[in-house]
Figure 1 (tube, rainbow, N blue to C red):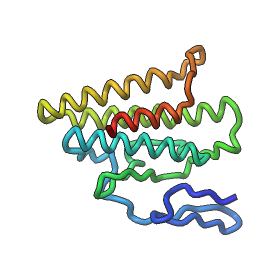
Figure 2: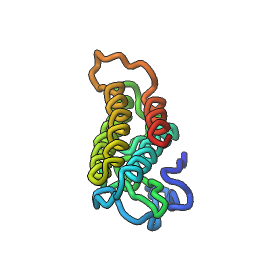
Figure 3: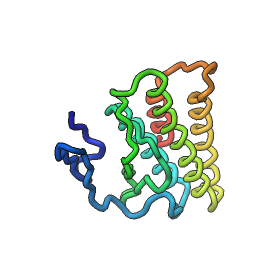
Figure 4: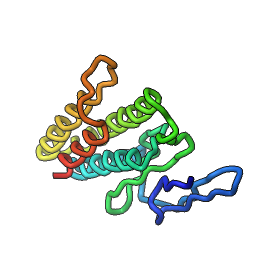
Amino acid sequence: DERDLAPRDLGDVIDDGDRVRLDVVDAGRFDLSHRVIGDASTAVRIAAGLLSAVAEIHELGWAHGSLAAEHVVVGSKFNVTLCSWSRAIDLAATAGEARDRAERADFVAVIDIVDTVIDEGAESSRRDRRVARRARRVIDRLAARLDPDPDADRGADPAVLVRKAASELAA
């Protein structure tokens, strides 16, 4: 069963019988560990793209497994590409609580990364601080709804919540 872990224009999934490997090409300008965001509008655009990317990989049946700022590559038009898939988890082959933990771990990591990205973009003007405050409210609501506490009300599907937050950020 061959599944795409990244868009086709970024690389190829190669199954040589003994193992499956993902060969990728240079995907962007910088990764998020370099902290070269600029203004709050750019930061929010990157954050929305990151939330959408993680929701999409989950919908495709995968969890990243080790999401960190250095695994998020930002392209020339501030599009987001996830890399470093060595710990990816096949959600279709993972049952129950283990699947939920894998998905939630990705979402918690995304929220941490997005918090940092938004903070980086809020350092300039009054407008940037206002844009960052609005984005922070969206992310705080998302974090509260994705609470890993087993007694918390699960409510909506986490991927739906993440997609909604991404849409609110992009608006």
